Image (cartoon, rainbow, N blue to C red; front, side, top):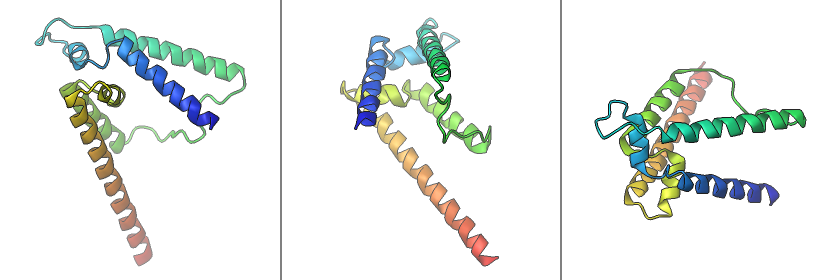
Length: 149
């Protein structure tokens, strides 16, 4: 119960930060990603938000290390960069650039009734389900190959 409450509180704080920093406004994101200025002047606001997040996270990791806590979750992967990571990052980047939403702000925007956010979240859920389906099919094929040997 305590873990759920902590996760819920962290989500509320994260969502409030997204709202306070206007990162739920897709035009802010597109303004940051548009270095050429085709849609108006370049907007560095996202850089400040990301910088603040990186510094906060870094300080938290140092604090946890001093307390003897783990710096990374026990299930954190150290597999490195592979084709799946690169393809996933490219899909994320294209979707982020086209819509101005990444998952967190899209979900927070649902609470404000943003119609475009509903379409983005539906696309994220669909993409996640398709990826899961592909992984299961790949696992079944691998099992079938191993059984045939």
